[in-house]
Amino acid sequence: MGFQSFPSEKFKCLKCETEPNYYDILQSWTCPECQTPIHIYAEDEFENRHVLNRIPAKELSAGDLVVLPGSGLKFIYQTENAEWSKGHTLCR
Image (cartoon, rainbow, N blue to C red; front, top):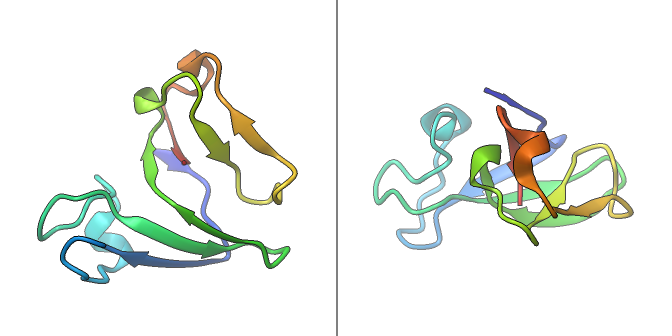
């Protein structure tokens, strides 16, 4: 599974308010307690702050917004066709 991460990331489940570590959520990006998608509080190298969910690229839908680490806010991509992203994990 390939993905890019931000220089600073903090993980939190809003449903049960746990803060799992990276290795507990690496495979599914869901809370190990309640299986709710994890929110990622991230700051990039340009000090832009984001609140994201990381999902498998095969779950992207037309119209989703994709933030690529290292791109800053000027490169937020709106998907029209998710075929280009198969096999990768991206943030949305």
